[in-house]
Image 1 (cartoon, rainbow, N blue to C red):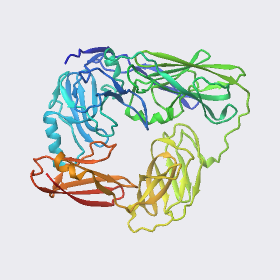
Image 2: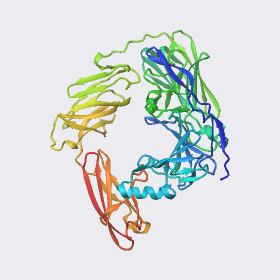
Image 3: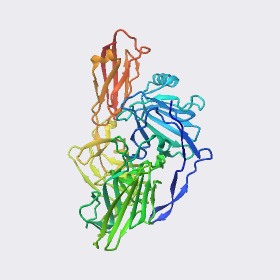
Image 4: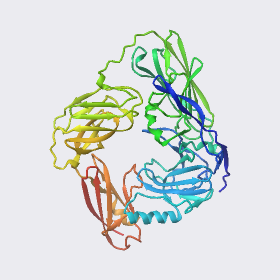
Length: 567
């Protein structure tokens, strides 16, 4: 391997919440406890070819931050993945979510998680396969002793792949600081190997008049604008700003998250976000910080995300109380220091601001436990689940033939920071087998998707993570099993089946060949195909064989099918 070690001093710092400001939190700078032995760490890159990324640290994802770097592998699987330093393998997993996964603890105070691998190597590969057959499960986990699998910098520890929820061949690399348990940006350790001279670019701005406290262009609704607005923007009262922006790198068309966003108003900084570290438990705060792909430049009172810093004593909100131009300037920077600016003006215009009209029982407060009790519905939202106050747009409708009413908690999705208990009463309890009932979320177009739940004394009890629209549905239809290219199974040595379920999804599967357990897995969860690579150790070669597959959905409906092939 011809890659030299890259040294980079650890200069991360983050801000802690320190006291209440208008029911929210102020943040003050503090040094991170990094421990005495990791003031300076060095790593070699995971590959011996030029580094190119398909995703960077902290990108906006559904309900979470992207926790690491995605290294491109030239569209190929099977590239050797190297240890970044001296250490030991600490965890070995096969999962439907991340595919083949290898955790490595390094002696320099960091650990990594290598996801979406195509294969393990050496004794680990043999050990995993033996355990899969022993447990009769594709998904397995091994926690070795620290001395079992030592590694040296540059040693090949696995092969890159496209397994789990992966849209193309790559290596996802998480880096975790041992002293804090924080996910940290790995990019600073590979600076010398990265080419990037392109600054982040903004694609839109957004303004949020605070409910009952502000207006934008005469209305109390959020408004989006182009980066260079062609029409004047007017506002009055308390407003928050946000921006949609992406970073870019030399020679590739990918879009990345923006490392640092700073907002100044009239020359004074009011807010900055620095995406350099977060704890796993902070992931869902992304729902408070973002609005779609827009990043808010203010902090909602229940948001404790440490990477957000307000410096104006008002959680980053801006008070427009004079009839004059307010000059907003955004500064966008990537991790390598490339910087761009966005400027726009908001004209103060004295406008009447109407208070929020609501019924007290439908006003949910962020800093207390909230209860909603209606005929056939019970909901408890504990303190700490809401990021800001919510005035529910609550309604109920009865759809003919449905087993329960449809309850709209709010007219748009309001993410909760954790799961909250809800009970929906059955309107027509017509099934003997209560396990076939499930709570369904209802989309804006009326589509339904399974939330799960259990039956209890005439109610379906479930834990929800969003204030949305819900009802109870019935699933008595078993899954479907479809053979894919069965005529090729014998030639390729690979059996591929598609398992489909229209309502509650596939919950479990088990396959046999000639009556013996067969190792079927879901190598790529995007396709969802069930695949068995034929192994002469477990299937006798030279003859006709019988495959039996049993698939069970989320409500216990089961399908078993038989197929035949020659190998």
